[in-house]
Image (cartoon, rainbow, N blue to C red; front, side, top):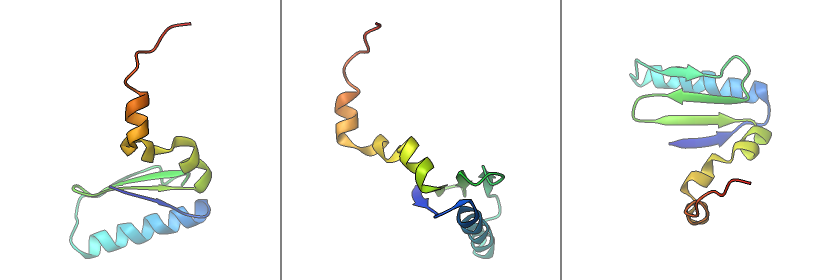
Length: 83
């Protein structure tokens, strides 16, 4: 899995198009791309490789890197208590 940021919607879109072309060039035939209409968060599924491309604000909001953070795992072990 690759997580990367572009500086703007246009930059994320250009990164997406570059990946699409390069993956095709190296022989990856079935590449699914989601989110390329708005280019806030683009997911490129190239089979064994998953690529997330974000605008910085969107990446900061979702913080998907936390899924691999040890502190996140420890905080998640306590049961949720309803208010």
